[in-house]
Amino acid sequence: MTYSKEVAERIFKALSKFYDQSERIPISSAHLSGVSYENIGEEGLYFINEILKEGKVAVYTTVNPMGADIYDNIFGINDKFLKRQREIMDAFLRLGVTDSFTCAPFDYFQIPIKNSHVAWAESSAAVYANSFLGIFTNKESALSALASAILGETINSGLHSQINRRTVMKFDLKDVRNEVEAGIYAYYISKLVDRPFSVKMRNEMDSIMKKSFCGALGAVGNVSYFKTKAYLTNEYSIKKEDIKKEFNELCTANSGEIIILGCPHWNHNEIENFVRKMGQRNLRKDCLIACNKRAQNELITRFGKETLNKRRIFLFKNACPIFSPLLKEKGIKSIITDSVKAAHYYRLRNIRVNLKPIQKIIKEETE
Ligand code: F3S
Image (cartoon, rainbow, N blue to C red):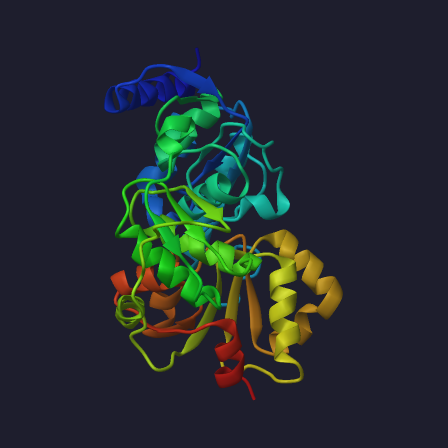
């Protein structure tokens, strides 16, 4: 047995104790977190580089974004960080993961077949997988997903079992009109539930609303599965003032120095929609959109990089702007975003947030 498999076995042993369950089931894919140097630092780099030196993933595996756009360092992140981030990327690629570096692996990469079991670590992706893709995963930690990827198995616990997927509370989301409201409702619900729940939607959520809902739900609390239904009875009624209160806690500024979009990652269609909605107008501030490299390739053929940059749109490729030294290095203290998940994390980092939907961003931040 290789040393990396031994380490993975030790992680599983600890998990089995924790879950009081030793039965394992095969997985069809894994998604790993713990990729940004901002998060894992020297210790994490040492772990992947040295401890897992001869390791190989046993199943199709995608990975989370990095802490910087290492291909085009337009925002001037320091060289040491970029060097370390590249080393982390290389170490993951040596493990045999797919060159993905995204928190929305369902957009460009192999989607596991329905009803299959996977081990996905990114919280927003785990909620999305369970709730919209019909696959089964727990919200894995960086270590448990890594062990699963190496062994091709997971512990048969939590949301892998039908009995734990029974929904208890029911919510009517009739008032949800945009991605910020979708995120705020999810953020509020996450504080009320400790088991899967059902939501009734009047209108189908668009792709960014879905990502926003899953991102916010995954960011707080422990529930990674909900069902959407057209009809519910005895639903819990969410008061408008409670939603307003959540919003006011996250929206802490009237404006911001930079616009940050793409949390979770936008695909090229979502970015193209945003650009088309801008019409002939240009942004007044730099707008960074987090996305996968493949989204940029598609967009460049449609718009050209210079045209996007002239309009002050910059793609932050294969990277996450939140778990990044980006704002600290630029001395930025306030941002504009449409992402409740981003607002949640920025608040924890003392960054002031102007939270508003794309439509309002275009109205207020373009000329
Ligand atoms: Fe993705 Fe980073 Fe947001 S990993 S979901 S862009 S916090």
